[in-house]
Amino acid sequence: MTSPIADGSATITAEVIRNALAVTVEEASIVVVRSAHSTNIQEGADAAGALLDAQGQLVAQSAATSVMHSASLRCGLAAITQDVPLDDMRPGDVYASNDPFRGGIHANDIMVLRPIFADGRIRWFGGTLIHVADMGGTAVGGLGALATSTYDEGVLLPTVRLYEEGRPNRDVLSIIARNSRVPGKVIGDVQALVAGVNVIARRVEELADRYGADVLAQHVDGYLDYAERRLRDELRQIPPGRYRGSFTVDSDGVAPGRTFEVVTTVTIGEGEATVDFTGTAPQSGGAINASFSQTLSGVLYAIRCFVDPSIPMNEGCFRLIHTVLPSGSLVNPDPPAACGGRMVTVAAVVEAILAALSGAVPERSVAASALIHVYTLSGVHPTGERWLTLGYEFGGIGARSGMDGPDATGAYFLGGRSVIPQIEPLEAQLPFLVERCGLIPDSGGAGRWRGGLGVEMSLRMTAPAVLTVRGDRMGVPPPGWRGGEPGAAGSYGIRRVDGRQQQLNPKQQNVALDSGDVFTIRTSGGGGLGPPHERDPAAVAEDLREGRVTR
Image (cartoon, rainbow, N blue to C red; front, side, top):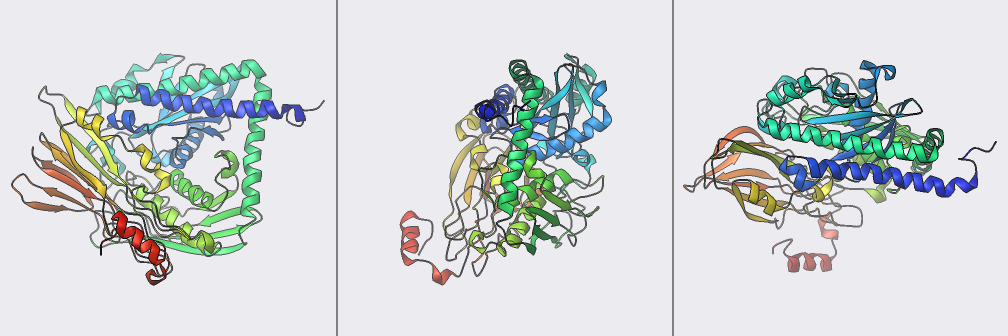
């Protein structure tokens, strides 16, 4: 008998199913955003939704799902199924975890997974993940800038059942609520995650009823194989060989003057890639360590920068990427290392691989980019209710071969500028006003192609607050490449109500602000590419006209 996949008449059905799965995970993300209680989720729409199979393979992810999130969901699901065998799971069960040493990211990034049954057994899992409002720790919102262990960063959840056969596990929810500064918001966020996986389960069950579970599974397998074939073909276009790259992290916030090197050797051959981090610095005593799932996400993101971007993001891509992650290193720390600031190291992983593969494919060279500049603000309303928010700004992306770097966008693996909330809803809900938000002239690194510009944003407080900041590529700004100059370094500062200026460290925790104080973020610019004297004079004139550079 001809299989549904081999039969040419199944092509249309395959496309219908693939698009149905894409819509399913997209709907789940939308449901999470619309149901969440955290302002940054409501306004930034930063919510992950994904479908995985019973073997833990990533099938589909929503547009808002970064590789950091999908890598965590697939690695976290593997840990959950180790703890709870599939035979012990029941319809309506929902599981959660946030342990960075078992596939998670950090305490505030809770992943939720629900088994999906068809023909009496588990065939798939729906997964959602967001940065919930607060999980305790030494600083609000999960931003333990000076944390030295996971115990400083908030409550870690082993594999727990949030729902048992459709009934909420009130003991677990009570523990989460009791350990949060804003229990109503965090429980609302968790319930939004559950709503998302319920949507995925319902939609996939409908597809299984319509097409049959086995036929649906065959089309899913075909989709993963298709992505694998396409990526293999693309990797074969990269000259085979071993390529080395590195990147320097300028600080961890707790060891003054110490920098950290991420070193990688990328081996390309036979349509596959092996990325070896031997030589990378030992794990940090601060919060910049990246758990294995997060390092893997940086690896896959960087490799995808050198292939056709239309290749579907699913398990087919993970199959061809192999990693060597030395235990006890910055890219695979041992517990109880703090991991909340893992973006610093993941971004360094990306830059190291970009530098390495620029030697293989020089026409795709790119200089270093700014990193996300993060902050949290918290306080107490006159009613006695606590408020808090997690915010961030992006800087410039490094110049690319043949093109200037985009302004104010930051590394794309964090979602790009689209995840930054609009100003007006923040001002309506929180006690501050945005005095300024604009590009910083001259902040992009000079070069034949100029780096993207950074951003200056100033917030004037209308009530007392507590501030925590975490940034990087500020002490050592994003370097240029092939003769290009570095971007300008970013900074955090406060203008006190009496006019005094206070410069903050790139990583500083629990700074008191008074009503009338102005908090200013200046994000770094991207590095330039190629010698500046080779820049087209017409491009220089255009930069002057548009205010990107000054005379």
